[in-house]
Image 1 (cartoon, rainbow, N blue to C red):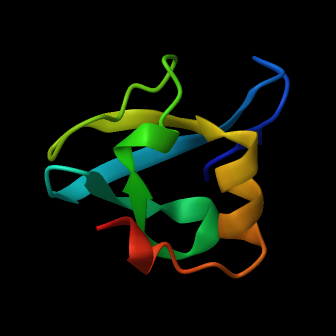
Image 2 (cartoon, rainbow, N blue to C red):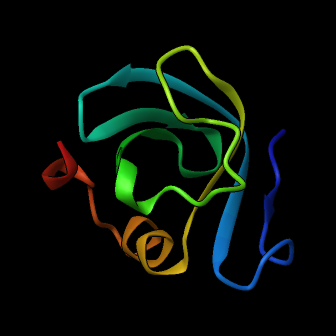
Length: 81
């Protein structure tokens, strides 16, 4: 089971147990278990604390608060690629 943690940094949201399954020059496609599906994440929205930056990376994904609200609000991230 994965855990979404909000308190590590005030300017980022963290998702544990993620795997990057694809990559373009401007975005990564990440399997985010907490959201139940793969999502495209613009590289510009990755937080410096993220362990997931490129295809094959596994660990904690850290994204900006703004982008996390988009993900959780039903945004599909498709415009990221």
